[in-house]
Amino acid sequence: ISFTFRLFGNVFAGAVLLFVMTFLVPFFVPLPFYGLEVFVGFMQAFVFAILTLIFMSMAVVGHGPDGDHH
Image (cartoon, rainbow, N blue to C red; front, side, top):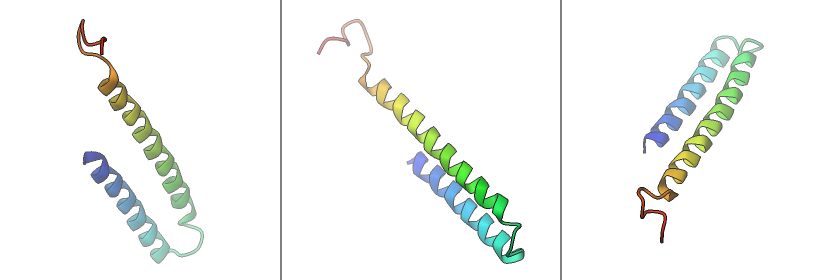
């Protein structure tokens, strides 16, 4: 659930930032912010993929001397 709130917060904040910058100065000023949002999106995808990999590996690995046998 915390991943969901984190992703929602980042996407919502980025959308608000883009909306405000586009509303205040509508031509070339928002362009760097669009690039920033694309970068943040890639970073979010990378972090979520790594955390999912870690959590899945923790769920699969045995937890003791007899945890390796199934």
